[in-house]
Image (cartoon, rainbow, N blue to C red; front, side, top):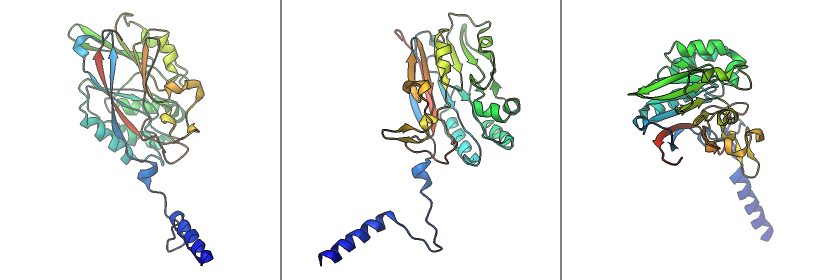
Length: 284
């Protein structure tokens, strides 16, 4: 009797971990469990030098779309729809729009061309864009009326006040000259740096830039207890892998992004459309 009871319990345990299917194939893991759709995160960022006329400015940060076989265009379209629903004043795109093949450049640029923002859509390039075709990616985005900042700046005006957007090519792959982005930018005016790689925080902090918007890390993409994130790199420092942080007087927000590379899924690290609201702060 005890032997039969143990056998039933063992069979029951096996049933919980084994699912059979006609044809001999095991079912694929549920996609939403491993790769959920993007959702919106909300963060207020308080900046001492923010002009009062820009208080409450809404920025949508989209990054690391990685359109490819692993990240279909439907995922990009979903992120664009989420972004537009937030009615942002500004959209910041911080690179890695495609992976491996230039055939994805046109479709992802056209999808991003559907973004709508009162003050415009601004972009920089990431390491994967350079690996595929940086100039081609930039041209495709510009054809969709997206402003591509390549070691350059753009002044947003509100009355007599200005807010400066700086954009630099990828620090590791671009081979650019980021100091060019600071030309003709007054030192005492608020500056926001669009920079694909969060390693740019060190360059920005040394130049008293107020805020850095980045991606690149995917937040780790596959994040497990104890082990941590699969794509996290110690050289960033743990504080610069995802979300808000600061280095001295410079703040940074690192988005987990939308797409996937190497592994066709995310675990414990859902894709993100980041909605950032800038607020005037008296003390930083």
